[in-house]
Image 1 (spheres, one colour):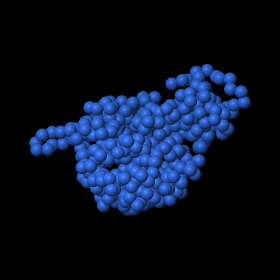
Image 2: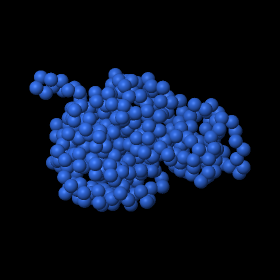
Image 3: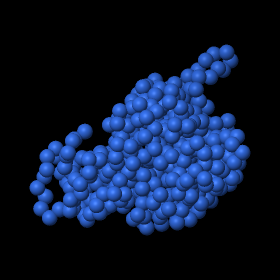
Image 4: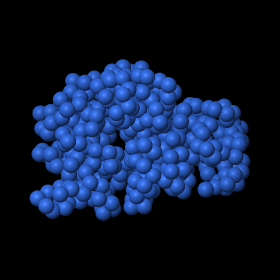
Length: 388
């Protein structure tokens, strides 16, 4: 924490950071008005927002989601797919390339996160069971050869054929991640050697202590707590995980190994009187209520509607984590998990000027990407060169 500090930006990069005023001739000046100046928020796992979903099949949907979330401090995101056909994924790859080239008003796209179809059927959650299968080169190689934009692939490590697939991903600099899995400790240990080092939405569709033939086995959650080389992500909306589990994950893993994610669907950023169709629930009618998406008959949760500012707010007020460590879980930790920490995730000289200004209640006042103000809610607009 630097009280009354000064941050200088030039050509989209942070060029100086000081505890005192810096003489920077001809600079535009932003007075942060006593608010916090933070690194931009990085969302590793996101499906939609503002009424759109990445699976909608249009460039406009991609751009709309990026613009919807940048208002809440997200400066970078990894668009996430749902379990579907190869044909649909190939279309998504093309849409992603087009949208990335056009995206100048929203959170930056840093790579595609593929979720499925290699899942344990009993841990599929809202994923379409029609597409769930075991990995085979005939299925995944056409996808890998079609794009260089895949950054992460979430899957169940206990499935036949996963070892070869994971090693293929690692060779292409794609991170394999444990997800929608019923694996036990003994199955996860070799998977770590194959390249698995992260757990997708811990506690959500991940195994816990189980019994097989009268013997108890640690599941994914317990293994993640035991293994220091496994990082985790959690949906910190206060609904998917209650206070006790948020605190348990924080106590066991610490801010340096936890990424806060929205895992949000199209309803994120919409008003609670909205009724809409959600692709994660087979286009059934959903309703927004109690800070979460539900089926219209209120029989089940249907997905997160949280935005990045809400993740920090939940951890501060519900889990009672310190502010600096809470911000870390949405900035430097996800950057390190994805291997982009040399350019993003902290306010450090030479890094990208991805910056968020927010007040004591985590209301976002300004969002800046590469030194350009993208969203402004009460802070004077500026040009390229500036300091705070």
